[in-house]
Image 1 (cartoon, rainbow, N blue to C red):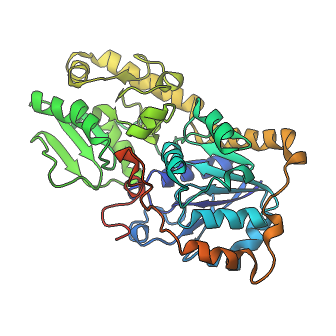
Image 2 (cartoon, rainbow, N blue to C red; image 1 turned 180 degrees about the horizontal axis):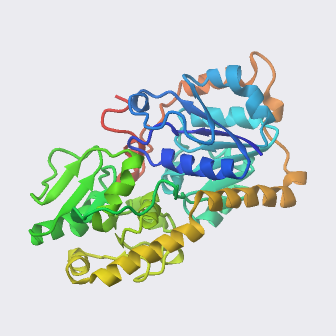
Image 3 (cartoon, rainbow, N blue to C red; image 1 turned 90 degrees about the horizontal axis):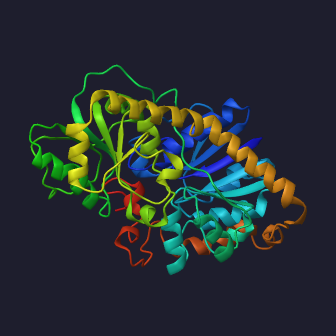
Amino acid sequence: MNIVILGLSVTSSWGNGHATTYRSLIRGLAARGHSVLFLERDAAWYAGNRDEPHPQGAHTELYHTFDDLPSLFEKQVAQADLVILGSFVPDGACVGAWVLSVAKGVTAFYDIDTPVTLAKLADGDPDYISRKLIPDFYLYLSFTGGPTLRLIESRYGAKMARALYCSVDTQLYTPLEQSYRWDLGYLGTFSSDRQPPLEELLLTPARRWRDGRFAVIGPMYPEDVKWPANVYREIHLSPREHPCFYSSQRFTLNVTRAAMKIAGYSPSVRLFEAGACAAPIISDWWEGLDSLFEIDREVLVSFDADDTLRYLRDTGDARRLAVGEAARRRILLEHTPERRAIELETYVREFHDNFSSSAPRTHRGRRQGDGGMAAGLASQRAGKTPGGNAGATDAALSDPRRLHQPAGAGR
């Protein structure tokens, strides 16, 4: 297929989980012979932190404003076999309306933030998608699986909602021969809802076990966090440094955002990255974890500081290493770039088999009069800015910028 992806970022992994997700998917698609054009808005907070400006497997183009898309890339979008719009794309609702007005192939919305999106839809349309647009996309690809997929179809009218989880580049994420520097490490950007479980599952054990060695890597942590003396801190590691970090830990910690835990079936890319490096994983619990990993064999579950300390101090090396190796086997079987590419191919084929003859394009007739669709969307863009307050009652959802932007972004 000839594929166009419009996503938040593929060139910079700074403070977002989108870039590594797209890079991995692109690698899988390219390996199976597909051609990929990735269109990324040139955002200031990513411009200074582009750790992979030319991802392997895709042709990447930066654009400055929404108006650049119709003037520069309308032909590519119109001729593509598949056009994917990702979540949290600036002016995403306008971009989506334009895509639907010109694309002749299959269109898909790829929601890498499904629980956040659903909370914002319940409170009022997000800036990057709208209730009105969802039924017009042929596919709704979701980072959250399980019962949420049926909700997206029944409540919001999606034609086909299907899980397309993140995957991991198994050429980059692989076990390394390293001496252990830490007993337990954690890699993740600060979020207020994730901080309490991080306190319970890592910082409290660090305070109680002063001979233990711990590490927390990630940006945006407030200055008032009280780090124990035996916790090593670093602001950022590029993806190429992640395997070394995972391989330098006896165990690695996975902590899930509150919205993802409530929805369930929302695995973090960190789970897959750590597993690919054969790092023994200690994870918080959420519904659906046992559908992805075998509990106690491929992943260990901790509910509190006592559980974490018991794993750290009482687990023998043989069992610890066996857990890491079992997780790696699971990743290599089910969560590789090629596996995700095959799943995407399957969904496109499923659409063609079941819907293509009876799915009219709602937006096609709107490209007429006074400058066409692009001009008509200009007034819509003047309303809200991406990442504005959605009014969600859950504090975890009230500021979606925390998901994807480093400190100071958007100010």
